[in-house]
Amino acid sequence: MRLHASLSGGRFPPTAVAGLAREPAFSTSEYRRRLQRARAGMHAAGLDALLLANPASVFYLSGYQTFAVDGGACLLVTHGGDPALVMDPPEFGGALLGVWFDDLHGYPPGVERPAYAARMLAERGAQRGRIGSDGAVWGHTPAFHGQLRQELPQAEFVDATQLVVDLKRCKSAAELAHVRQAALATQAAVEAAVAAAAAGAADGDLAAAAAAAMARAGGEYPCLAPIVTSGRRSGILHTTHKRAALQRGDAVLLEIGACVQRYTAPQMRTLTIGPPADEVRRAADACLAALNAVLDALRPGAVASDAANAGWRELAAAGGGLVFHGTFGYGIGAGFPPNWADGSGFIRSDQDTVLEPGMLFHHPVAVRRLGEFGVAFSETSVITDDGCEILTRGERALIER
Image 1 (tube, rainbow, N blue to C red):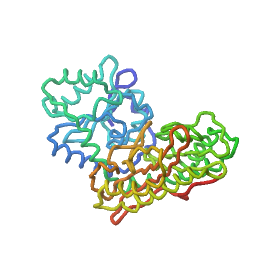
Image 2 (image 1 turned 45 degrees about the horizontal axis):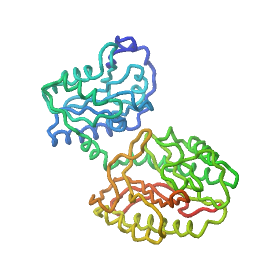
Image 3 (image 1 turned 90 degrees about the vertical axis):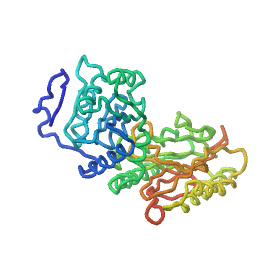
Image 4 (image 1 turned 60 degrees about the vertical axis):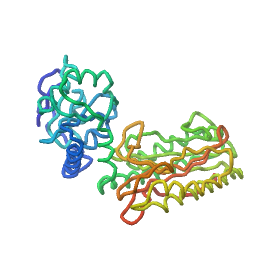
């Protein structure tokens, strides 16, 4: 194994890794298939190299994972040999646990990151080539890319974000195995949150119960902590627990996604403390009907907008004065905080995407009367050869506590 640059800038001592057990998320053959497909995409786009910095993309092709997502790690892929991973030297341990290849580098002291990345690209023959990048994100700022262009003035840098999104669009059987395992932990977390709900309990009690159950069921650190929002705050998008006591009549919105090997199976559920108000019941019935209609419409060859329109027709029964974000599904996959979405597709009325087997979606059907109440239901599904499979589990209904 080639380990370049220890903490002090020299060669990483081999004795420091003797006997370290690997924890690969996937088999080497799985990674090699991904690499082959990435190179096919590079060839089609006329790229000589890829320089990837998005943690999910780096993980997808290398197996490297860390919750220090702003650490500036990057992956170099060319048309020959294995990829090369460059990171801060203290992060070598994480690379040794999960990376399937041996070409691991650390940024040496006194050498700026773009200069080191440029040198590696040049060593691989890309100094005059066309280099694809996944954008100025995740620790690789515009200044990083600007200096990289200065270091390689004869190279052409292009945005290759879509190439990587396309690569990850359809999930393999190995990926779906992790999602199914995550779905079991999600179910345990949702059930624990529901069991903790009662008048006088704090919203944080539900979140704590969900987090504990998720960890006990095998979930790893999630992309998002369990979301619990109640009463009037349930009517505000993207709010979560904040020391609020649950009161009789409250609607309580849950959004929980357990993670296994960086793959999440999100689910949304709504419960009420005591009998629901008529308007809450009406909104819940409409959301459930819309979610069911969307799931029934999912199959290979179907158009995303048709599935969304099926949802809209049912959602009309929710009543007036409610807001909805318009997204009946979005692609999910390997992810790191703060996002389990992977940009691989959307089920909306303005999307003409044709669905394919292996496409993985979260379907958040949520309506809110701003500052009054919110109702939400969702599932995680995958398109199969003849329809779709619902991967998340548990009863799909408004729950009364």
